[in-house]
Image 1 (cartoon, rainbow, N blue to C red):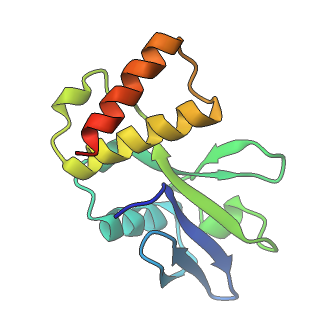
Image 2: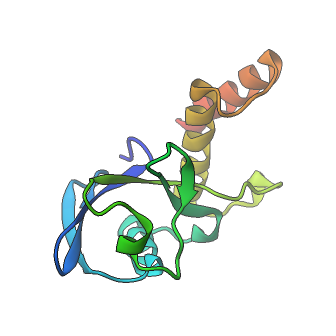
Amino acid sequence: MYKHLQVADLFIHRNFVSIAMIISQKILDLPRSPGHELYTMVVEHLQLVEYDYFDLEYINKDGLHCWLDHSKAINKQINISKRFLYSFVVKFYTPHPNLLEDELTRYLFALQIKIDLRSGRLQCSESTAALLAAFIVQGKK
């Protein structure tokens, strides 16, 4: 179903932005517009109900992870001469994941934890990592 959280390749054209949705392999065009329109489009495309936990992230020219600024135009946030990959990632972790209602939200949280553990972005003890891995495996059933 959903393979990973990298959701969009972004191509800047003269009057619009083309977004290649990686998950569904669709290309959507969006006029040069504020970041919140891109975010809303991705959330609607994913049909995500509990979207407040997530946001779009990109790596800037200095190699730093940056959040999409919802109030700024997309073309003002990135180097328009390059192709940018936005990742749809967890921005806020809930202290009570058992209260997440939507199956897709739970899946995306589990996937984010799995990616962060594998990349070393999430640091924890071996026993905690084993417990998290067990939860992820259980969630696949």
